[in-house]
Image 1 (spheres, rainbow, N blue to C red):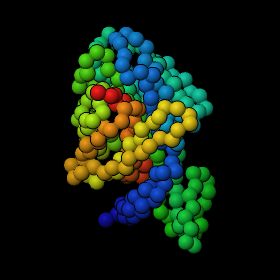
Image 2: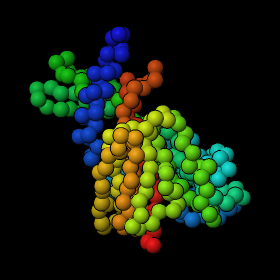
Image 3: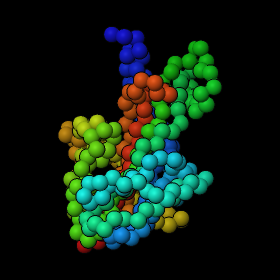
Image 4: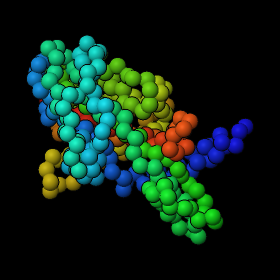
Amino acid sequence: MKRSYLLRTLIATSCLTVLSTLTAQAHTPFLMPNSFDVQPKEMIGVDAGFTEKFFVSDVAFGDTAFVIVTPEGARIPFGDIHQFKQRTVAEQKLPDEKGTYRLSTGPRLGAVFRTWERNGKTESARDPKQEIPADAKLLSHYQSLSISEAYVTAGKPSVKALAPVGKGLEIVAVTHPSDLFVNEKFDFIVQYNGKPLPNQKVSVYRSPMDLASQSTVQNLSTDGDGKIALPLTKSGIYLALVRYQAAAPAGAAAPMYGHNYTLTFRVLDQ
């Protein structure tokens, strides 16, 4: 077994523990469409960013390949993207197609994080120039990789845009995201590189959509087949968050990627 592989394995084991501790404090990526009900040939707009309070962005999402998957399965880019300090705004005119569209930020590589333990204390750094003390124990070393998505529908919901990518971290909807109602369930699968992730933590936030109230959160875990059946008890705008670490490809800025995937969806009253 090669030394590099051993190092990655040891770091991965430590990262799982550290990541669970840091999740509550970490900024969460999101994509929010200006409407979940659209019409063919109309302009669709999205806000995207990182936040600690949904859906008020603190940090812009950044320059990524924002994309739309059409009801026929074609991929088209957002043609008009504006980068602000605290949020990213993207707009695109939809084609003349009825059905469900998948809106995606595309993958965004972020900061490199290192966490270490020294004299019983845990420290962390984002500055690559900061040296780790020689007597410290490295706990994690990863680069964030974030993708945020949502679905909108023109007319009757369709399924082609829901097809899994099969690469990276994603939520695969079983129940259609444009057909979610109170007193029903949202069934979905969490998978990585096309394979289900059993016993994977998923945090589901419900936003009151105002500046005064706090979002509520449910922490759930997938079953042995990577599935979750989320009870829908209240209407509103929701965000499902999955964080997962895996080995980064050769030549990456860190040995691990800290994957962040979020899906924004709406739940309606019956």
